[in-house]
Length: 315
Image (tube, rainbow, N blue to C red; front, side, top):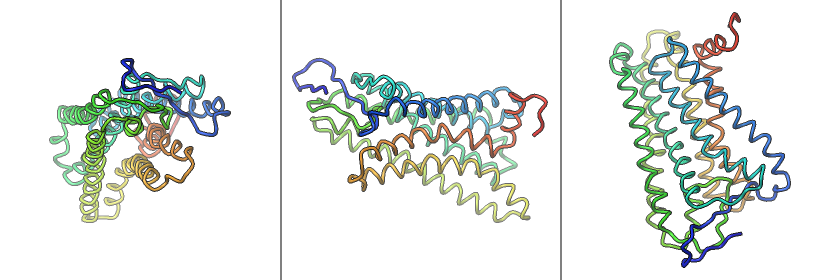
């Protein structure tokens, strides 16, 4: 492994790790990982293609879904190069600049996913609580501004972290815990005073994931209150049915995030491979499962897919 000293002027090199204790089967593990990335790519590209081609889907709800698909593509592509390089080629070294760039994109797309899920919750809130004003409130320009705001918010809160990391010295053995770079994983290798960066990272998580999850929960409290006031059982079920897909993708995103936090805080006695698997799940599950959820649960998406790949077939 590579060790750099404070006096070194050269850029440090970090060591990526795959699955501790399972190095002898890395080449076999690369097969399911490659398939997972392939499914994520095909699924999200299919969602984007259906929304692009089907003019009937040019509505705010599906525009937000396309934002989610783009975010999932970015999240999976951010980790793909180094994960497959480690598993396939045993290429473990990564230059610091490439590592900082990777963690910037990983965390940006993670926070962007949270922001998009909040925007989708807002869309469902307006559609159910203010149906007569839906078209007037969520115009194409408003949807575009919401998407741009989500992107600017995510990039702006993450950008300071790699800039701060570049200022630190790394004088230990620079072995990371995963096959990709994460902020806290790199930060713990620094032998500089990293309290500012650590505190900033915690504040960003609270201000993004924490606030978004609370606002999503609040939106569903308001939605539930409006649904319970509906005149008939059929109307209530119809309104709730439009939210099921969104609720599923919210759980797919936030449950692994909470699981990673719990494992990191209370699971220090667990085998390292458990921490690696949990981190992989929180980054790979949403890109893989989100297209499946919307393909199965949303009739318009299913019909669009059938028209794309199975002309003449009946649903």
